[in-house]
Length: 505
Image 1 (cartoon, rainbow, N blue to C red):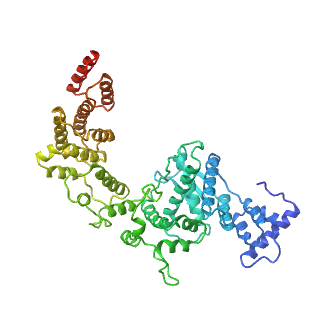
Image 2: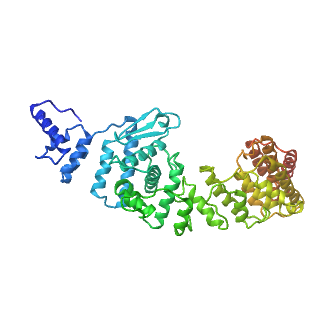
Image 3: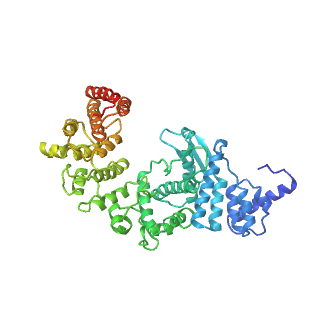
């Protein structure tokens, strides 16, 4: 905005405005405020205070549009995109946004300064509520998808704190700001799946955050409200309306008059109080992401015979109870995969919840006799591959795993039909190069045997080996940096020779 010319008229207007500034601190102005003078005023906060004396919608809009802020030039496009996303999300919830909420949103947009700056390594951004500044770490400059999330996260804090001075709980504030960010961006992705915004956004989007505990608590509370179909409405109350309504919705109205509500969160109590909401838990929900509590609730639903909602649970005991104390030769691999994945989700976000279960497979394999291993080698191997995929196998299992693989190879060489051939091939495909065993030689030994087993299964499945199949296997083997076994090489040469004669093995 251009500086005012120092005319006699403007000097008079300035004097008048300064007089009103003093008056508004104590009482209503005694005479009408000149709107042109107010619009040219540089003090944003004074403009906002004077808004209360302008009931006319158009006049208020002029004042709000005259508010000033600074955006770093390289952030213009992202800031405009963030504002567009927020407006679209808020409008979808309210349909017709209440005037006061619309004004508050525009006040934040028009007064917030946004720039890059250098921070310590662990910091991504900072928000100054009083000065309305959002500052983002320079290290994120070339990660626009993350910068977009930080801008929206910062705006969420400023919406919440438009009346600065409220005593806001950190769990509510950080957890809700992260949820708001995820919802806004995912809403835009769903509404504009083919729009090119100049960079890639993961679908679903989830903000990079260190507020895992805050996210877990707030997303769990909001998941319970979702079952009542009031989650988004209450989230809007938190950011743009009445925080007391939000708090009453999540903790109830048990506080005595003039007493602050108890915002502490007890995982077990909340589960018992809202069991109806957690009977079926949607893993695709935005509230499931960045949340270790909902996977815990899902586990508790699956294993009702023990109290999972306490710290320090033994994972081996949970799996045993889940399978009714059946041994690994009777466990269904799909169910094992499911429960290990749940435990993994929890421990990846909160390592204090469960004790490690690296030795689970070792304990299970040692329970079996040699005859049991030979008779059920296919299902035992598939379950072992599930645990290898999840990197939950210790170095001490190498000998036992290779023994199981060899039993299966022996069966195939004797022409015994294996019903789970394709399942085992799929499980081998799922493995990473690193099994997480912490011993390269042991892992290479298992990979070599699995490579040989794979060739044997493909031979058994196809009835013969083609040159194409052999070279496909050779390519995969070399790609995975696994040496070619001598017997595989000889089998390949023999196959190619026979194929050239037009024969089948």
